[in-house]
Length: 420
Image: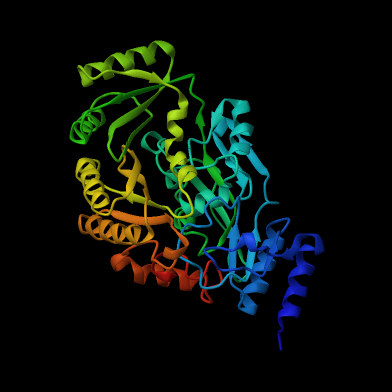
């Protein structure tokens, strides 16, 4: 008979006593308390831990920098937190090929500092880059405004290695930018919230560092005017790298556009932008404008609700008017940052009962229009709400994929869409 004590002894033996400890109250996830925290030193230890936990029926929550543990549904169980902190090395920087192989526990900031020595970067701007790890960023599919020019994470990752619940270490992809052989495991695990396997390392394509950058901002009197200008800019020949719109309760919408080029080209781009906007006033802004999305998370208190939504850019005005209408009816304040791709973050502040009512109505109306609306941060009283919304006819396929890779439901049980 396998006892809790014998399981802990096996896990402790794999990593050593200095890397196995009891979990603290502050490490609870959505109110569910884990029993212990384990920190493997390499891929082999991590795979062995997973195999042991899977055999014993232990629920495992992978953890990187811990910046997004509130994302997703409340876990069905959290027996073990599996930390990737020790897997933090850069395995290979093939700078001549513009690729890098990095372990999952490496922070994005550490990676950027390493590859910048060769004038390169991973063209990615997730939340909290100084703390967020590669594995966590991939699992949550977190990207920012740079997605407009360089694509999403699925466009930047070209290879991945992960440990499956049965202890198998699987790899897919490679170190070359053009790679079409085999099953596309990198894209499958990106955004899967660690429910299919634990990412141990990844291979990314890199881009050159820009010579110079310039952020231009402008405001409009109405969201309808802002939407028209956004669509005009997107249809133009401008070579902008990023574009976001900031708006909120009773505030005029403000847009920020990022250009990356030589100084002469930056001036030419600014002149072209002014020609598109005609009489709208432009002003140069600091790079801090691109921290607006992260500021929403920093501003959010324990009683606030933060959501991510995805709409068609042509629905920007309609969506903002929806925010205005529903929040005014319930006396809520709201702020949003919307990328030109239509992906946005929304902060709602007010009474809990009002947050519940508005969130439910927003989800219903947005999903009816073909958009998505999911919760990233919510008050304790709302932790039982379904985070992901309606997944439609994809639920059966997702459950089948989950069963193939994690038949016992060991990894992040209940946290993903549809309670997977």
